[in-house]
Length: 254
Image 1 (cartoon, one colour):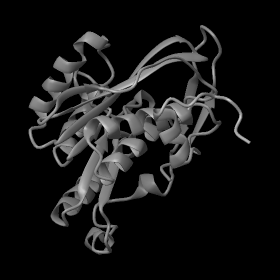
Image 2: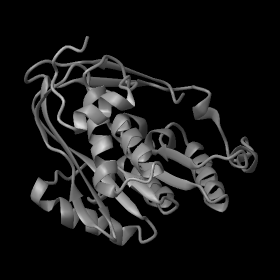
Image 3: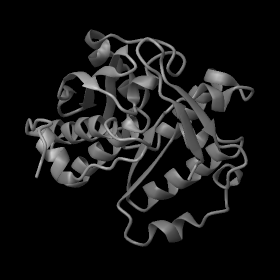
Image 4: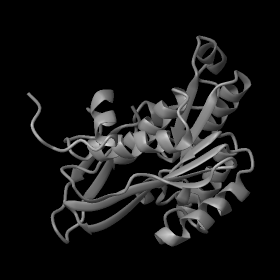
C-alpha cells in the first residue's frame, strides 16, 4: 500500500481530519526502473489505475507513475488516473503548483480521469465549483486532456460531518455531461475511501461494458455504501450496489 490513513471523523460543524502516515513506506522509495512493467502487464491485465496520492509520496514517485502508465498504454490497457490532491503530501515540495504539474503530466496517459474537477482550476482543489458549473468545468478539463475518453467526478455538499449530499457527474465525447444519481441527506459513518469506492464502481461498470450513465451509477452507489462502514475499504457486494441503484431501502435483510 501507499501507507495508512488515520482520521478523526468529525461531528456536526466540526469536519473530519485526515492524517496521512506514508513517509518512508516501501512505495515512497520506488524509483523509475525498479519495476518491470512490461512483465507485469503481459499477464492479461486489463486496467491500470493510479493517482495523485501515489505521485505525491516522494520526489521519485511521479516518474514511477509516468513509467507505469506509459507501459500500460503500450500493452493496450485502459489507464485511469485520480488527481487526489492532498496538501500535506506536497507541502515543502512545491505545493499545489507542483501537484498540478504532476497531474497534467500523468493524466495525459489516461483514458479515464476520476476526480476530474480537481483539475478544473488553476490549482488542484483550490476553486469551488457549483453544480451548475460542472458541465463547463468538465469540458475545460477535456480541453486540457484531448486523449481522455471519460472524465468523472463526485459531487458532494457537506451540511455537516455526519450528513452529506452525494452525487456525481461524468463526461465523454459521445454523451456530453451526465449527472449521476442524487443522494441528498446521506448519513455518513466514515467518509474515508468514498472517492476510491466511486472509482472502483465506475471502473467495474466500464469494464463490464455498461454505458456511462450506468457505470456512473455503480460508482455513486459504491461510494455511498463505503461511507456507511468504518475504514477506507469498500465492503459492499455487487448485489448491494445494484440493489441501491434500483432504489432499495435500509430495511433489515433476513
